[in-house]
Length: 112
Length: 110
Image (cartoon, rainbow over the protein chains, first blue to last red):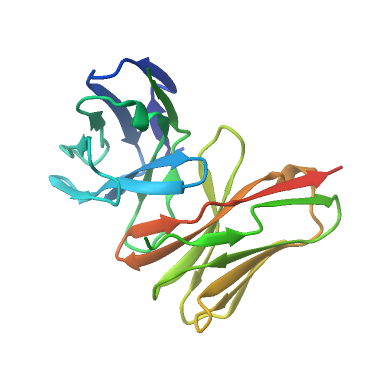
């Protein structure tokens, strides 16, 4: 069965370190997204991609970057981790615009 | 922010009762979706309703949409303990970008 997987499930890192969260989908979806989930804020869009070599900023993109070199993967990089980036991160994909999103199970990131 | 807002923030009911959650949003939309999130897991899509639809059913779920009031409701009938989860509405203003509300936490007591 097709799926979307995130790794690692849990990560603890120190302030100032670079961190990369992996997202891999086997749906062959063009659209991929990164969200962060925080209490009181719901899910907020960080970055998204409509296809290979395409990346776009979401509403909370500062301090994050993504790259899309193939259809399956959209890694999220925190250039210099900050305590404010402690959160649960979700990757999602969709087959086309306005289609339902398929979510991974999330990565819990703690920045100390 | 284009984020939606769910109401109530938390809801506790007895098994067999109906659960109603509401979502309000700020901008015009193409469609609105509802998702469920079990503790420690990703969100799972429940139902999508388009802006030209007023009501949609899927099993025990009924969704209504009032674009004039910029609001939607999700009704779960004959609730079960397994329905215990958080429920989110998501709206799209641009292409594939979805904006989520803060969610309603539903507890169904056996």
